[in-house]
Amino acid sequence: MDNFEMNINISPTDKNYNYYQSFAKQVSDWYSDGKVSELASQDTRFMLEQQKEKLKSLGLELDMKTEKPKVDTERVSSISYGDNVFVNSIIGGNKHITISVHKSQNEIFRYTGEGTLSIIMQNPKEGNLPSPKTPVCCPHCGAPSTLGKLEDGCEFCDSKFLMDELYPKVMHFFIKEDNENYFEENQIKKYILGGFIFFSVLTIGEMIIDLLTGGTRINIVFEVVSRLAGSLFAGAIFGGIAWFIAGSVGSVKLMRKSARGATKTMNSLSFCHKMRLIDPTFSTEYFRDKSMSLLKLMIYSKNPQELTICKCDKPIPEKFREIVDMTYYNSGVDKYSFKDGICNVSLTFYTDSLHYHNGEILRKSDKIRMSLRKVIKKPTNLGFSAMAVSCPSCGASFDAEKLKNCPFCDSAYPIEENEWVVTDIWI
Image (tube, rainbow, N blue to C red; front, side, top):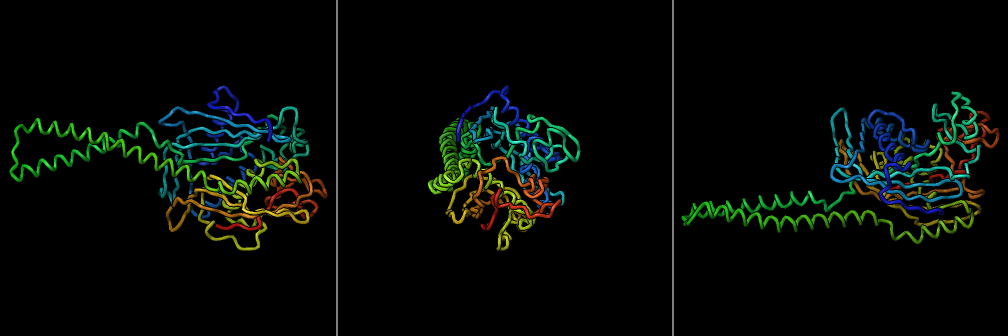
């Protein structure tokens, strides 16, 4: 990783800010009316399509909206880092999130509250453009092609594109609806009010009991006022304590979620270091993004074993069919090996997921394990996508996500020489 740059609370005039807000609207439009995001990469689009098809197979509809935060000023920050070809930017900000799931037009799940939307955006480095042979899908018709062909004109729809129309692209996005401000000041008012009501009820109950048992009263009005004032004071103290405890518990819970997988850090760094010795173009960020993309494809596909990237010998556990949405928190390498030019690596992903089970949507914290394999013969193609590949035999472009053989010359495409494949997955 090089050219590291961090910007806190970027200006609305910054181009990354505008890309971020545009994608936030586009992803909401996708879930509400199926309008395809122009900024989404071909892999991100394919993942969203797979998720929608899976939901449809279960008779479900998922709607997700990201809006300006209701309780705080919107702040957007970014971190940028470069590899050999691309500049990757992680852009995140606070949003008001609404997620709902319907079954036969009946709402069976709803979340609304403050959260965060983060995106990973990719742009070619200035002065270091990707090769014209870089596979890419036509933004107009979706046909597999290359950068060079699209600049001359798509062979299927004849649309022409300039480089700045093909990039940037959002490679991944994450919505964390439970990333709340657990110490929001407006929440303390509710706790104090609750404390006041609690102590007022106790006070009034005590006075009624005293009256019924013959207790004497010097000045009933003065006593009621003074006792209610005492209830307000007690409510403020105990409500404030309850607010602090609730905030602390919530913050600890969030930190614990984010820290899952921290024990695998050294093993992950060791794996990435050895990979870079074999392949200098390999990067930690690339592998993190690639493994997350493969995980989402496996989770969101209604028939994952039909995917070209799936080389699993065992049946996919039925429990994966329950997962309809997933929030990524962390991941780490469990073990890895290099033998005869082939790398095998096993990882653990820590996520919060929405499970559809027995007619209900349940939120669960999952630990998903996945094994990957790749032939290590040539430098990593950082812009590779299985949705748009070039056949090594005849040079034709096609979608290797859906076809294992070239549709023009029928040659088997060597997917493992260019892409990591999934050899096992379990939960």
